[in-house]
Image (tube, rainbow, N blue to C red; front, side):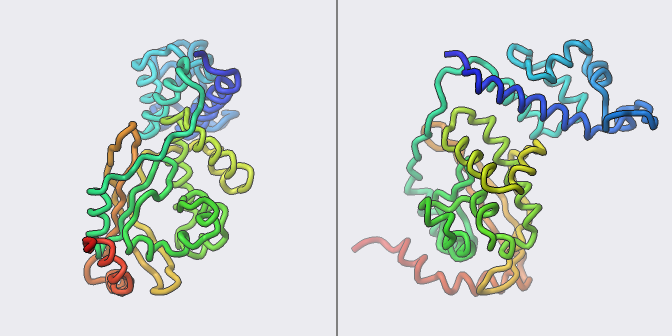
Length: 303
């Protein structure tokens, strides 16, 4: 089945905007070219990228207009090197190329994948570490008691109540309270959008994901601006600083682990931890103490 005209047009627009935005970020001096004061556009010119990638200017111009279908992976790798793309950006460019190929099916809703019992047991056993399973759309699809206590403002938000599932992008961009909860709101919001954009090209036929992006683009000017930057990120790891309404400021390191599930779902297990001996550890322990009865009930076998 060939891609619909709307799909082709949308994909070409993504390719064009992505390549133009990356080209603008590379200063001539970074690749050994003279800068000069008479450049009309920031970054490299198209012909300069073409030379660096070993292709003709006409060919690169056509690529930048979105004609990526059929382009070999080797040529795309050369363009990625010329534009000094990060590993995540290189992966995204290859995903753009795959999305331009003839589609085998129309966009559809991905069925929810049941989280295996063993994964839920492991989550509940982590009594001192907030942990959850996150889908590609950044839904929290499974969590332990400490995670629900840590993210109580998001779980209690109208953006969750309306959907029955906590979703990071919806909470960040549609609930004003998120700006008080996330100490580094803008940094977190940009990272969230970058992860969502990468997922949009990894799963181009996910109708729910398209609807999520459409809703946020319609309802949030901040989201529209960040989405238009075409930044991409495959993983989001680092330090999270939260102003919890009950225990105060928490600074937590977080890491993600791939969690392959049936039906090719690509979910991640996210685990948080506080540095030992810090006020954040003391506050996390306080929060854990409040959730201990709930966690015990979750793992206690039925009689």
